[in-house]
Image (cartoon, rainbow, N blue to C red; front, top):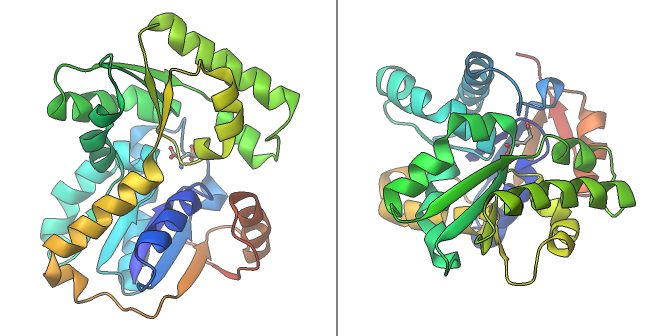
Length: 269
Ligand code: DGL
């Protein structure tokens, strides 16, 4: 199975795109719903939680785990890759979603000015700015934290006037900081669900970059380049769900993220 980890429900937006691009594989999704959101937690805590989840997915037979969470990718991936895998799991792989996204963003801008919406944790890690700068040193990257957006989605406020107000507020703040921005990256798994509100708040000339399809294309490419991992993945097109909250809580909440009639298994670390 391909393990897909997120702090909660958000990674379901990435899972959906992975399934579209790679429908033949089996997936094991783990949402740490009992401890979500991660967005404003400390580096140490996010690292500890993420490592627990990765260990769990490994122990259930995933040779490859994708951290489908920007906050976990920003704050835990590098340490897991450098300090844990080589010593404990040399034949397993953990991938994040920041680098693959950073590799592609340059294609979406003409002015060379990019805006990034993300959680406070992702913004303060500086990961996007560092990674994008690596591939596109000439791009001007302006990051903006939107702490209200995840709760807006999770509390079912999409499509309301309140949601529109809070989206407009952050969009205006970002564009005031750099009016030359012509592309914005939704660098948090929840934000694609606010697409309507974000589109309405942005001037028409500004493009929205969604990372789900970028990540899935990059995963296709990764598996092509790494047959030693690919051949260990099972292929019967199944998806199983694990959650650190109750199964009922997950099954109900997943509806908001477009996953209906699923059944989940509850686990405690
Ligand atoms: N999944 C997280 C992300 O992509 C958002 C939710 C959270 O803060 O835990 O950053």
